[in-house]
Amino acid sequence: GLPVSSTHIAIGGVFGVGFLREYLKRNYATQLHKIMDQHEPAEQERLRPFLEDFRNASVEEMERLLQQAKQDKQQVPLAKSERKRLKKIYREEMVKRSHLVKIAAAWIITVPASALMAAFLFFTLRGLFVS
Image (cartoon, rainbow, N blue to C red):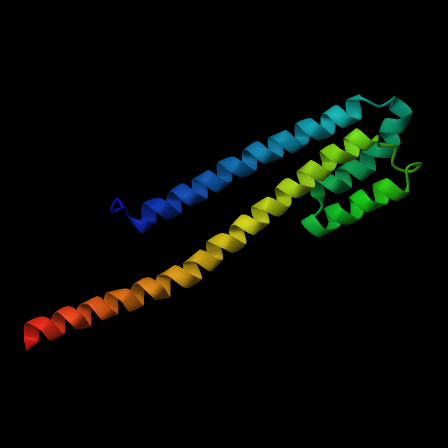
């Protein structure tokens, strides 16, 4: 591979994740506005608190809110297609969390492994040239 600085990789990762989050949040807002626009003003008033809660919810709370919307259709007037849109947002949030876990696991595994390989190479070369 190419020799690259870990600082460049870290900075690129931070900016990349930042841009991804910005894009996803903008996409969420667009989806939520589309849902609101498809309803009558009376339904919008009942729907507004639910969508605000959904926008500010953690991943676990999003799942609970989606279940609540499916069970209580009078309180949360969402069509099946709208619930599917919200479920897509929920899945995208879960993907971001799984990426974070994978990155942390990769660091935990690769950093000690590369240190062990470097130590092995060092002592092998030292043994060859010192003898």
